[in-house]
Image 1 (cartoon, rainbow, N blue to C red):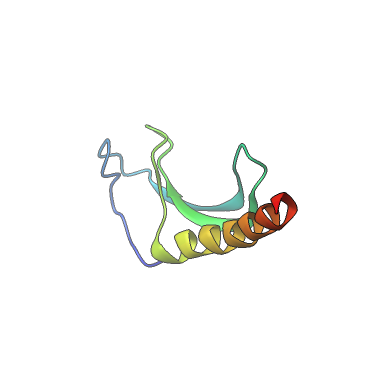
Image 2: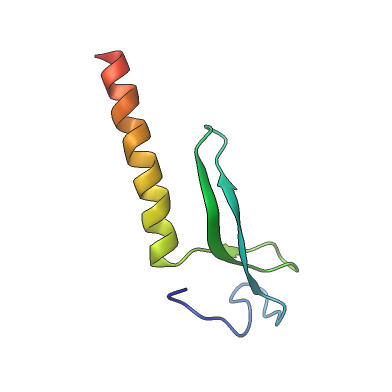
Length: 71
C-alpha cells in the first residue's frame, strides 16, 4: 500500500485496517483481491494509487468493448 493510516481520517478510529477482497461495482465491474483501507466504525474506504490504477485498468477494456459493440 502506498499510504498508511494509524487512525481513520474520517472518524479518528484506530481500528482502520487493510482489507483485500473482490471490489464490485453496481455496473458489474469486478477487480479481484483489491487492497484498500477500511474503517469498521464509520465504513470509510480509502484507495491508494495502485488500487485506483487497477480499477481504471479493469474499467478501460470494458469501455472499449462497449464502444465497439455500439459502433
